[in-house]
Image (tube, rainbow, N blue to C red; front, side, top):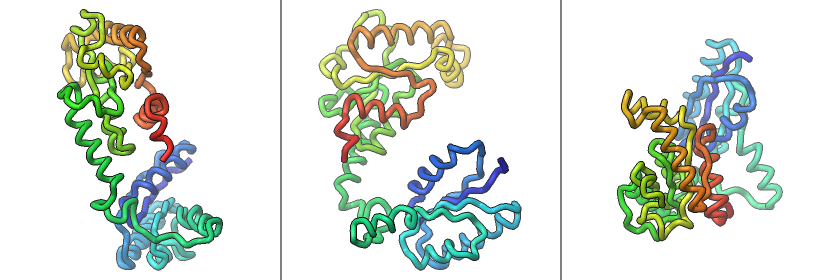
Length: 274
């Protein structure tokens, strides 16, 4: 399949268009060149993007793919029209207009996820969750673990930090994470700071070979990164989680999105309904 340039055009951040578009493109064996154009909220900006699309079509000899999320009809029509040399996939016309007909009401034409972030309780909850996750990263603090929604446990470099931040940023989940270290394995029990909160714990593990590769990028040639040591730590961590009755999964072949959804399903299923 020939490579294409793909535009993600929005009057907001463009994250929605890009997330949706990438989900669709993942069904095809192609690696397109991504071009995000956020905050296209005026006729002048729309005309500039339209000209860029036409220029790419002329240069590459094939139509760019254009994922579009524009609220303003006048701005949108400057890009989504018969003169455009791209294949325009308009998410609002595809989804919002049928819903207008179904609900019998018109959409609000609000740009972005929040009308006013400063007035949004959901937005403030997300910021609070991000601050909590940063303060409780890698076992830095044991304060307020009673208010944590989840505590991720596992060996160093198995994916706890990015998963914690994703849960906070995308779902407003207060996620702490705590590394399991050789001293914990010698004691043969969960760290005492975590014992009262065991029901909130969720474990991550990883293939030892993959772990050794990741650690060697951080500390090449060290015992910390040695394959033998990685095998030992992973085995001991899995044994501990199994003994303590802590649910866990391997991050080796799973995306952060898959890991986060599994955690929500197992520990906070209420957050899957909102």
